[in-house]
Amino acid sequence: MKIFIDAGHGGSDSGAVANGLQEKGLTLDLGRRIENILVNEFDGVSVKMGRTDDYALSLSQRTNDANAWAADLFLSIHINAGGGTGYEDYRYNSLSVNSHTGRIQSTIHHAVMVQLQPFGVRDRGTKSANFHVLRETNMSAVLTETLFIDTVADADLLKQVDFLHAVATGHAEGVAQAFGLQRK
Image: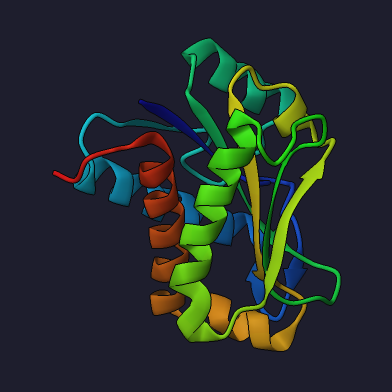
């Protein structure tokens, strides 16, 4: 089982910035946490990080790397902005909720929400969109948006280590459930 983790943004592309936080740093932190949980707690999983430090990658570089590696799942990690609150995730808009990717998305979504429930995080649902990383990947792809960096209450959660651990655990548990990974 090969999981490609795309930590959104990086380098000169900071992503959303607000409340003393930068999306690019949070996505890399979460990506590394998810990788650590998957590799150390589950059998038969290989993880490749799209980026391992603070540098820029084009969208094509991200999808080309995942396609060349023949990943089984492309998991793109993001933090939202725009004044809302809560967690949501996306699949490519030509895929139904009942598609293979839709079922993976639903499993990851549920696992994340279980972990975030103690924090009172709003469930914004599973959605679809025509994003490059969802459209140009040859494997199932899910893009997650955890909280809103420009909402103070959400940003306060994003500054807490226990919250970041819960987010990563939810992502890793969802991937493990979706692909039937066994614990070590």
